Image 1: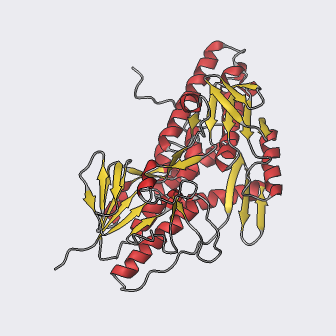
Image 2: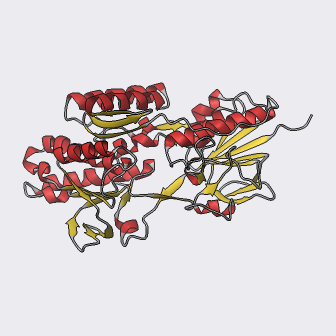
Image 3: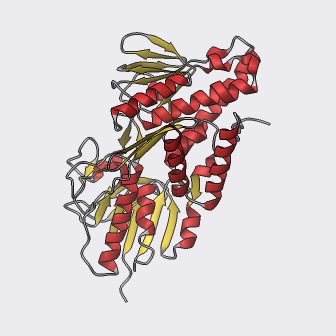
Length: 419
């Protein structure tokens, strides 16, 4: 009997995990590899950074997924090289692996766009480790400000760079953390006077949304105490300051970077014709010269088979693309049918702005703001969050925060500190 085809999936994000789960009944052996032993629900990372959720609430153990899928093996390892001709993937901490089908879903890394001092002094907000670092940094500053007395509000000055969903959600969450939660915990410390500034180079926030919703987001952020600076470029970031291209300097003991991402260097192994750093793929989400190799998620330059438009780097695109790749490999190996082209189903976009405030834009032309959008956002994200325990924990923390100023996860835990 000939060996079963081996499907090697690199990356356990939305795309990689989506592909793996759709191969559950396929006559293949699936090997899923990621440098972490958990799947991160990235849409809620900002809530870990601002003490609303504990890290484990948005991290689902990969071993749990393996238990539910007999043909799936998970390995914690980091990719170092891909050789398309020999169908071999090399790893920094594991032996080389060959494959019959390769699915590359390694995601992206933060892009500082060459901004002076950004890498050294700004906190990116993309991974779970990023979120924990931001949380610990801000809690340390808070404790130091309490010791400093009533004239310490500037110790909590914060600048958020980037006015997309990540930046807007972080700005709203930081404002509520500092001005409501921290301010209520130590009234004499005057945390409510801390300056929180959001800097965006475009002329409006949330450019992927309707202009009216961008305006609503700006008004709501300003209502809760965030200063919004539009049409501004950041030229330099120091340990306690952010300098704009105009030369203006903004004081900031915390600078959070939410302004952009880029693909990893491994993509150069997959194509000589990268588009804005991303790998072009065909309607089946594979390489033209190597149809057994699929590239999905944020690393892929995907053109929708129906609309012919290039799809954005969104979790919903990654998830649907991963599921399509899994279905296609299943069609080939189990059903002995031809693969089908990928058609993205736009289910809309949502972003929270603060406590009880959000924007939601749904097809064909539904626009919601305020509490209705916030409730819809919560319902959708609870449904997408992996694991019943995680859903229960998130719902509980959200309810407590909605009913009070408390942050249930506002605890500073740092293993590097001595007892």
